[in-house]
Image (cartoon, helix red, strand yellow):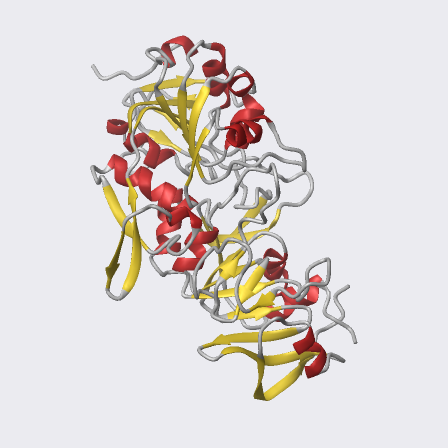
Length: 224
Length: 224
């Protein structure tokens, strides 16, 4: 049984991006997806601090303090990029102009609730950033996360225990174990990592799973 | 003759008073008015309400605003310090010495824009069903539940731009704009530090904030 690496999860999610889309990538694993977007597809990555058309991370020595993305990475712009202020960047998000946002997650519930902003760490202050705007405003919300917590607890649950970011917002989840759609009837497994049985997947998921008739094995390239 | 240029940081910050509200632009260091924030720290004003995206950069730039308990309230989308240990403002939030109003970043940006445009409140789906909508009025529009958010105004806004002219028109570089244009509209007195204060007027379609929204412009080197 070989769960996907972080890069492979990001690669798998990136394979579902479509030519012409405007895409917002959250911090952490989601932002890795930019490295694996189909090479011949024209896709615009948006960043909520005011970029449409984020390019590669700046090369060492080429960093410019005025060119940062929402994760404070020093970035470059791609051809066709535009820079705007925060109000307009969030109008893109809240006004339904972003085709998909990929977000990290602590938990996803079978009704599509997402918890990804408040880990309830004692003595640490809150940080919400743009998570709630993205969850509520993007046309599609894809969550990219490990299937289990570090302690081996399921992250796919009946009901989120952490404070939610949005209610019924998640459309799809990419984990190291599977690709799962969130449907009216709950979690629907579309693809499973090589060597992961349906029984094992269910035992590591705290909500009922159903399996698509064409449920297949994820065939990820070696990206270690 | 309209001439918004000032020579010294004391002139730039003239009129600050105990209990005033101050908007501070900046995202990941881009557009952060570092010299004016340090000059604010060098004054003796206290009981401040700070309206800004993230407390972290202000505390880093002007720590005594917090160590001397001069900030009474913060309205922001991020109140988390780096590292695992609680920082000074996290302890003050926990003890209640510092009142915190956490706003989703897009709602925050729109609250600034609304405040500057004479819109006292608006409804948005962002944050519905979450902790950040608790206690707020909700209404249904087109079958979607929305929460009421209020517009923000302030006594002062301080921003960083790249270029300005004596009429107070301001142009940005890279990702400097972020919350600046909306804050300039929302504050009664807007103060902008710029890298270059030029003799000739900016081209009519070459500025990002028209001078009608700014009050004082000061040329200051980039001290990042």
